[in-house]
Image 1: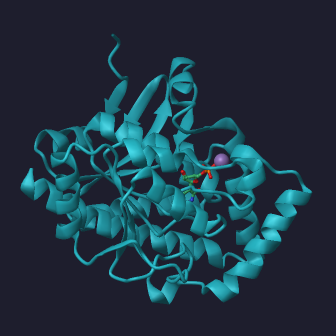
Image 2: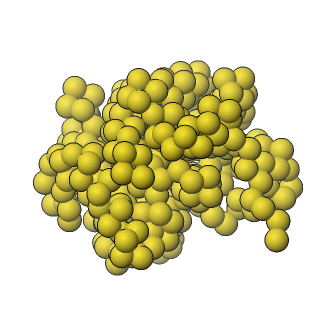
Length: 307
Ligand code: PSU
Ligand code: MN
């Protein structure tokens, strides 16, 4: 059997060998989630936040037939300037084909989880996971991120699912799949740009140590899959639900009129919401990513203490 083609940055390789805390980061948010140059600034800053909080960042992407675990600044720059149509948006379904063909690909939450688990990394920070799209009852558009959470043992820190989605349906599917959805420090699930969603959280935890202990317990029980930590955006950066909802609805309407479908839906909506909020959605998105990185570094630190 061929071994998985993993290429580690020296920093990540050393940290893993010494069992120091490492936090995985995805790359679709860079190529398809944010415009240049804010995407590059975000990618650099999120790595710095992880270092400042005592862990080593491992941004993950596919290039030249290798899964890169930890990128150099030059690679990060090149990726941030790659037009979305030139980088494959990789989920579980496309990862092997991208590697076999030697193409460049950015990893979504699902693909980043797979690569992190292969590399021995158990914590991953992102913005928002994919989920059940509005209108999924006819489009069947449900992100593979949900199924990945059910089968790959990585703790994912996100600000909830992206609010462009059908949030109640997303949480229902996660429950069905047996994924622990843990709200951090509040009783309600957050909704990406907003702190509240009106939906009670199935589980709540208030410290990184508890979250690390829950991950260990899942492993001890032999339960497959990871856990989702839903970390609310800081109050000073949020856009309230009443403000953002009309914008989301307008963007969804435009997507329908223009026939946007499949993998293009999420990038299209994020870009339109960015334009319609005159950039505010992007500043909030960046702020919540930093906030998630901080918590992920703390969780990774707790996990490495017990290892
Ligand atoms: N978080 C963000 N912006 C993004 C994403 C996450 O703040 O662009 C990406 C993630 O990579 C996630 C993907 O896995 O959007 C979901 O895409 P889809 O709905 O097509 O599964
Ligand atoms: Mn989809």
